[in-house]
Image (cartoon, rainbow, N blue to C red; front, side, top):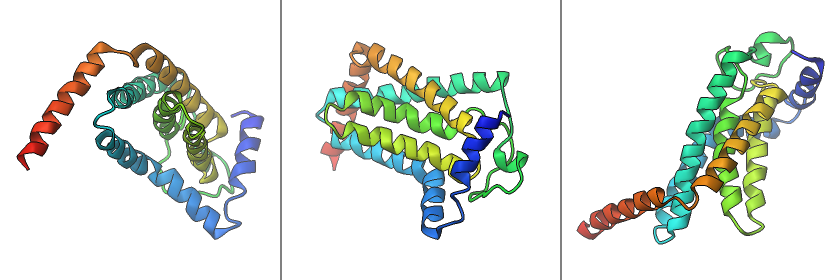
Length: 194
């Protein structure tokens, strides 16, 4: 582990334990952000029934996540290290996690995969909220003591590149539009029965 990575980790992680509200927020974000992301995306899927391009974008984000995660697992086979709480003394570990390979951060891959696609698709200033949420989620993993900055940066980089490529290659996909149309017709039949 290089000194810069450890110093970056210490700067962020040493902020833990100072304010209980910050610790609770960091632990909550580091643990439950994926749950809220799943609920948000599910809500958007049903809210945007008439917007096929938005629904295609949601499918693209799922594809981006799957490809990003596969790439991250491959990268993790060539380089690995254990979490800071397992390797360093005096770490503020705010959430439970088993020791294992922490490179790259799967949590960060997940969140950035979806957020970069949402960012690219959104044409208003609110698109920056997606990036802010992704950065906060990534930093929270360092804050709670389960990842080094390099883990988060690698996960974010893999997800941003993969998500961007997927978005620009698939946003106008005829096949994905057909999937969206079929899903819409199935939903319509289900809703008409009620």
